[in-house]
Every structure is written in structure tokens, then in C-alpha cells.
Image (cartoon, rainbow, N blue to C red; front, side):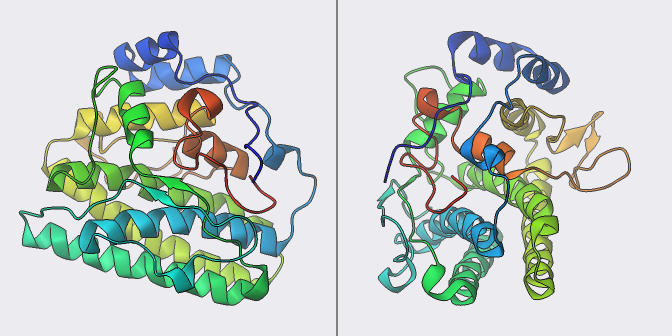
Length: 295
């Protein structure tokens, strides 16, 4: 596969790290918008996409989520029967079983893992021979890059999302909100009512996941950490489309806009987030890019 286009600014430059470390989430988002972080990308430049293109974009994201959760509960990821397809089949960097201390958190992880596996299988079946292969997924360097950008660790330090219950939940927080906004943004682009209904159903499940993760993190006092992660995501998307688990010193388990509507992101905005600023962030969770037309 060709290297993904790097038309985004260097989100993870030293001055950006300083901004996200020292500024509040509102300031970070406003500055990101002013600096034109939304940029251009192949996905944004595309004038028309098919339903298959959109479903394959979703499939790439479901591969990422499924691998994250399956490794957490089983120590292994997707079966070989669920990773091949159109494009280059990649490997998974990182991933390990979590030494869960809480039975409840372990059960949450298993339930979500089963859902994400089912989403992968459902989309692959719906796409048939057009389904893209699982691209290379990085569950190690990507977290170090993101945590450094958020100011949660210092350069040279590492963050292991599989080291503890809390680390696992913070890692899950990265994905679930992005999944909700991605499906919300992509659903109106679908032409098939059947596919639209399916996308809406998956969106509902992802929202259930996000709400559960956010509730647990609020109970664990992780408002500051989630705000820092949200600031990085919002800076990457270039819009005020992200919130931590606390807002105005109150619980914020359902992040919404002023009309209590779920945030929505374009495919280009989602790519900005999962690529973590492009080459400067090693293309984030997809070091060789996504498979498919939207990449």
C-alpha cells in the first residue's frame, strides 16, 4: 500500500504539544481552527463516494476497535478468517491481555469486544467481495504519541493501555467517541435505506459503549485526563466537537452540542484524528493508512 497522504499540519510539533498541555480544551479547539488544522485530504477532495466506500471506511475503524478489545480480553486479535480482503492485509503492533482487577470492567470489556467482532463480521458480509482487508494497526506507538501530545506523559515516556483497568478504559475512551461521531457523520451519505438503517443501529451500539466508558471514567475521577485527550481530538478535527467526561465541573457522560445533538465528523476529520497529524505522528493508529477509497 502507498503511504497515506500527509496533507495535515504537524499536530504533534513541540509548540502544539505545549498548547495542548497548557491550554484548556476550548482554547485548544479555537487555536486549532484558526491554524487551519482541518486541512485537505484525499477523503475531503473526493467529489463522490459509494455506499461500499463508506461501509469500508467504517470497516477500517471497526477493525481497530475489535483488535483493541479482543487483545484486552483474549491476548489475541481477530481470526485470520476475518482480516483478508481488498488491499494489503497488515499486522497488529502491540496488544496484550489486560490483568483486570475489576470483574465488572472485565465483563464490560468482553461485552464490547463481542460487539466489535460482530460489527466486523456484519460489515464484511454486507460488503462481500468488496470488503477491504485489515490494514496495519498500531496499538503501541500510537498511544505514546497521543499521550505525549495530550501532556499526559513526557517525551520518551510510554503509556501502555493494557497495563491496568484504568489504562484500558482511557484507551477505550480514545476510540468510542470517535466511532460515534464517525457513524453520525457518514450515515447521511448512504444512499441505501437498508445500509442507513444498519449504520444507525451500529451508531446506537457505539453510543452505548461510549456512555459506559465515560461513566466509569467519571466515577474514577478522570475528568482532567479525558479533557486532555478530547483537546487533541478536537484540535485534529479543527472543530468544537469533543468534550471530556466533566463539563463545568459536572458529569458529562453524553457529550453534545447546544441542541443536545451528538457531535458529527466528516471522514476527513476522522482521518485527521486516527492518523494523529500524519507523518509527524507516524500516521497514528494506521501507520500505512486505511484500505479503501477513503484513506
